[in-house]
Amino acid sequence: MPDFPVLVLLALVLSGLIYAALRLLFPAHKSPYQTEASFEELHARFRYTGFRQFAVMVGLTLAGCIAAYGLYQIAAVLLYSGSLAKSFHLIRPDRFARLLVALLGGGALGLALSPWAFRKLLGSEYQAYVDYQNRLTGLDNERTAKALSRVLLVTYAFVSALFLDWYTAFGPAGIRQAPLFSLQIREHTYADLARIEQRASFVRPDGKNCSRQHFLLHFASGQQWNSRNSGYETADRNADLLLFIQEKMTEAGLSDSSSLLPGTTP
Image (cartoon, rainbow, N blue to C red; front, top):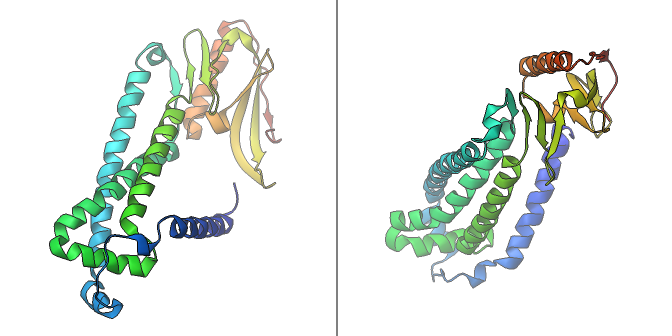
């Protein structure tokens, strides 16, 4: 993962490109909300109204986040209520992934409902206020909000489906894994384990070495499973999982040839 300043720079560049695209797609002059008032007059009337709009948007987005996360959790309960519920260790997407799902759904709902809610709050002043906002941004703000809401809603559905189908289950008889970005389900018995490789660090894509205890499962088929990107969020839970796997290998009559290596993951 790139360093934070690089991420900020990339975010700024991406924001600029998105804004430029929106200016081309939804220019302000095509908005039906136009008045004869001058910009100075509109500014004097609505210079602080944007804070109310922001508060409304935040409230609707937070409510949307809760609703979107609740829907995602209901789908997860239904999906994992079958044989996967019998797993001793069921590893699902981490908190960042679930937060992303909630923010996508919340953003979609906030953008979709905020124009309607603010129209109710401002009444006859709504047209003039939208005209003021359009002149400030150069965008047809209402059409832009609707378009972004649709994009976020589709993204929410796609990402939710992607994360719901991403898990690793360690059950009584074996391991079942649904990798990210894959439609294939991998299934292994504990007898298929060739060895466990423990590592103390890994190399990031940018070439920097990071200290982090993790382990790899090597199967006889040549496939691997990595606790760093597919395991639990905490080291304690991964340590418990490692102990569980070692016990299962012993039950299967396999010797644990794991060792702590300072090397890096592929």
